[in-house]
Length: 216
Image 1 (cartoon, rainbow, N blue to C red):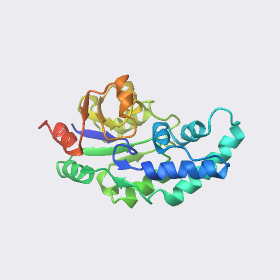
Image 2 (image 1 turned 90 degrees about the vertical axis):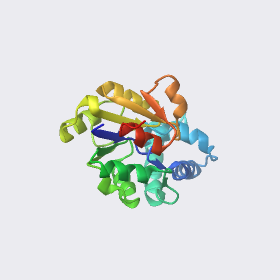
Image 3 (image 1 turned 60 degrees about the vertical axis):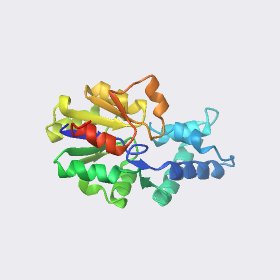
């Protein structure tokens, strides 16, 4: 592969605790009881507005949800690196790809200001040629505009480009852009691969490195 495009949450970083804590802080702000962390994780992947809408439920009017979203974003911005870490083996994998001259990019539905802060905070900014978030384009994943933009920017071919993610959203994005998809089993929503199977699954970052570099 000449270009590897990574999802962020659930793929490169384990942000689960900080996301769940921020959702539950938002629920507490509205006088609601905390939600189980596993339930919060099942809502991650389509951007913060969808996350908060699902975390509150359909009975809340749009103006309440909008206020809750504003509270969530402010709280998360202050706490997004409290517990967030790279998954095991990720830094070594990224270092290997960088050493081999394989271009890398991030394509996430997380807002850009958080995405850049986390990538920089974890010391990863030098690994990626481009970083795009949920508000970089008019459409979020699974719309293919992010991948299409990266292909054009980096001069990569579809045949030698790989989208890596932890959920069906990432697989659908790859399919819509006609590039290969890799699913990681350590993320938030690996169960969604049952209905949207990727081209291959990996259980560790080391396994992904071997596959990308042609050894697996």
